[in-house]
Amino acid sequence: MQTAQANPVRVEGEIPYWTTVAGRRRVLRRAFYLRTLGGIEKGKAVLEVGCGVGTFTEKLTEEGVRLTAIDILPDFVQKAYRRINQQAHCVVADAMVTPFCAETFDAVVGSSILHHLNAEAALKEFWRVLRPGGRLALAEPNMLNPQIFVMKNVPAVKRWMGEDPDETAFIRWGLAHTLQRIGFQDIRIFPYDYLHPSTPAFFIPFVERMGQWFECIPVLREFAGSLMIVAKKGDVSS
Image (cartoon, rainbow, N blue to C red):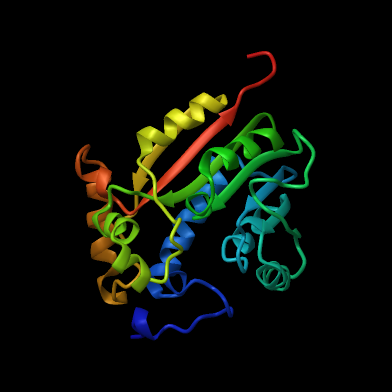
């Protein structure tokens, strides 16, 4: 049986932790959350922020949506465009200052992008380009997870992991307050994901079962690795 560590990177530039056996399981679950909680359906206009080389872009195009994917790195945008066989509009753009008109999209989704940005500025921009009633769905690292806490706050570890100095993670209550201040409604932020990318393939079913149990326990769930962030831009009449 192939181990997680032996799995090759499928696309040059793809983040290694998405390419292990466990990493691909995490991609599928995260993509499911982005699609369902983001209200992504056929015919919807969707903006994916921070598309990278298209790891999640190809999952989103499976829904038959009118997808626009952006990233600030031209090389990544080109790779994403080739990867999805030109099934989406891929644009080089800054997620905090996009080139799109106000109220353009029915949904804004993204994976592991907000923690690279000025979160409030980015969320205000997402609000601007969303149509009334549009959905926001983001997946981000959870600062209360012990490993992530060390990675984001211990400079030596941060350098060793190759992270940018300004990279951070989020505590869900503070992020919910920011979303509310901007004007988002129906805010729901929940921790999930105990499956580490380096988990050996034979051990994945056990870790997934334990993780599902931990996610149901009020205290333990707070230490999961990821946060799922869901909110809605209120209708004009609300």
